[in-house]
Image (cartoon, rainbow, N blue to C red; front, side, top):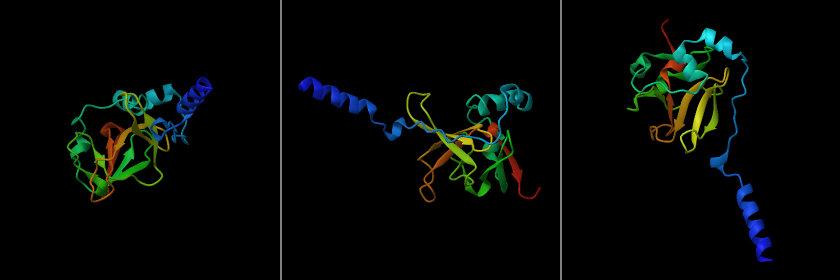
Length: 159
């Protein structure tokens, strides 16, 4: 009886799905292109970040210090993702925002570094943008959307 109880407990323990194990990928996209098409359309850096989930070097993006009013769009498909009024200097070396434009960013679970992070994607083309953390400004959302600048195109309001 003890063996049966132990087996039952082990089965239950290994079958439980915790939030940390959630691999729900909400990146079903409306744009579907082949790898060759993406390589043809994107620069090498854009391809590395947007299609291969790479990360640009910290402090390498000119968008990190962009302070004009405008909208940040996906560099692959031009979907508007973030507004300038939601951008803040996180000191991390990547453009950071406290919120997204509703419905234009999708999320999945990333465990590549040995721990669970929430990965962000363009909801239209599925391009990798960066990650979202819970260490953003407490006066607003408490979120820090840490985004690769190469994944974005900035469009000023006055142009």
